[in-house]
Image (cartoon, rainbow, N blue to C red; front, side, top):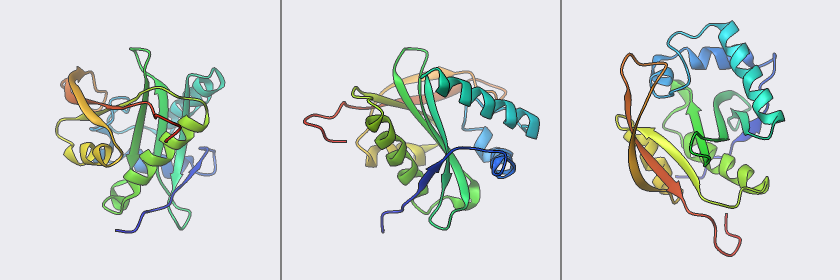
Length: 174
């Protein structure tokens, strides 16, 4: 398969409606611990504003994801998790899955984190019932290092998951 290219972009009022549409898909909010079921447009605006604040404080970077024709197809981020570790997250809209975009998205946010000075290990979490996300992380050099159970806004029960780690680069590799 040809390596997909993606572009990271800030979420603005011009593309927030598209992000809202992507986040309203049940297959998105059930896998993302921070997104409630059936989010409203106002909730999405608040979520984006919170991300802007986190970024201004140096705690996180959040970006929209554009596919090769410039369509907003997802969201990616890196942030400091509750354990003080840098963690990545990515979401691809249902209609865009199976095209290599999630792998390209994760690769792009890792590259941005490294370019912004993140030099240590990078972590990710996946729901146990989302093995496709684990395969994406494995392709990028992550190894499964543990299990966790997290509260999920999109589920009525706790979400069992896997913890993944990408070792810090040696010799400047990204």
